[in-house]
Amino acid sequence: MRSVRHLGAIAAGFVVSIVAVSRLPEATVDVLGAPSGMVIAFLLPTAAAGVYAILVRLWARDPVRDRSQVVDGTFDAIVFRVVLFMVALHVSIIGGLTNPRLAQLLPRIVGVLLGGVLIAVGNLLPRVTPNLVIGLRPWHGSSRTAWLRMQRIAGYTVVGLGAVIVLSAALLPTGAVMRNVVSAAGLGAACVLLACSRKVTNA
Image: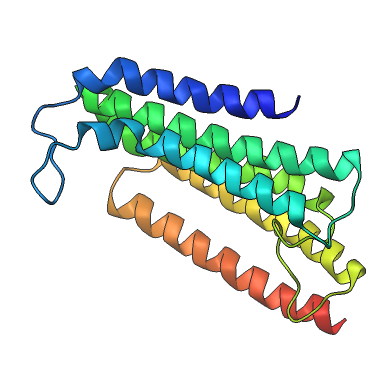
């Protein structure tokens, strides 16, 4: 039954696509010169459906993960947040293409959505137990203790990165300033995770 909300979100994305496809700018063409309104209208919902199907299949076949309702619930919650982000991003892009006023706000909307999904997923990472599908593996380490410690560190780091992105999108001028701050925060988060992965493994 948990799949109902995932499929509902994906279906909502396709409904928006069907409604909006005829309203997209006629000048929208792809690199080959062919009209790409259909591609723009259906790309992200299709990608969301594909991501969901692939992750669910990999999860079902994962020989490492714990078989429990708690672990499955955490996985479902993370996947749902990713799917919801993709659908919300799709709706925002469609809105920006069909509404000039919304188009001006699109960089901020995308930033808030990206930061929001990072915060939402980061909050769940400490609950992730060893598996082959989601989470961050310690540096060449396979111990359960190292894995759990790494997920806690990753969760805090990802939440922090998400908060920086949300605040940057909401408060900073769009353009180079926002890009530089977000890029620096992303690089810093990657360095923290790499250093902590080595430390956790060697502890």
